[in-house]
Image 1 (cartoon, one colour):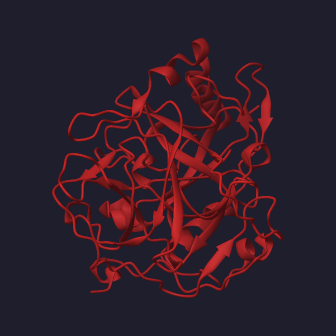
Image 2 (tube, one colour):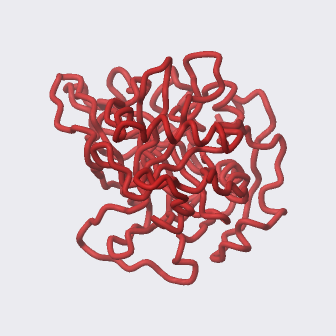
Image 3 (tube, helix red, strand yellow):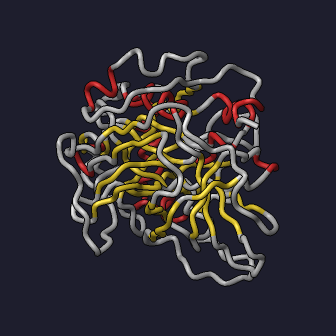
Length: 358
């Protein structure tokens, strides 16, 4: 069964052509003109609301940032899992958008793994309590875009559309925001996730305002100018190697807790088809072997990653985790398969301006 057959609406995207130039990739109107449009909602609709959000997280030396815990809605697959049988597959031509600063440069390969500067944590409130997920800065026309999991933006447990007081803090460490706090302005996801909580579309792209320097309360500039931005890839062949980055913090099912969530970690592996969970409507995901626990959700899967440049192409985000052999240890992570419909959602968000809140 084709994964799109389960939907109650028309497909979102159409096949698009690969391009090596950011201008051509983000402004072409013929590439992804499908209907309906990607679902979007407003996070902080005004400068006043954005300032209030930034103040909430930066007050008292980042007290709320330090108090935040990994999001309890990070989801794990129950029971033993057999991979394969997934509906994940390209729905058009392979395409890429280059990372910021690498529009005409081919990434080099090195043996060491240096963590990307683009990764960080997204913080938000649920019922007044502070939580976080993982995320990354990604290429965009105005260098103002964050990629993360859909369930780290959209509230799937209540009638609210989005999670409250949403911000991105790249390079976050123990209450510190070295490159500032970036308040979310608008969020984009696939209609199927926003309406049906279909984890085959568990991704979101969020435009953010210019950062706020928490020490001086001045404009810190655009996200992509400060930390760069990963490229974007879709309709990639399954079986290619990727790095998955994130901030794991939760314990394994057996109670062991090897991660603290303080510093980012990574996994490396080749993707495989993963129709892992009917409970989450996950029929067209991909997976890699990975021992990261809850907290890593929303972290980027980066293909063709260069440790020298700390850049590559986001080709997924951590969605679910699980224990394939039932031994009490998480041993795989999944991501939605990024296809032409994903590109259509990304492209819509990647062309929007945010501006400053100062």
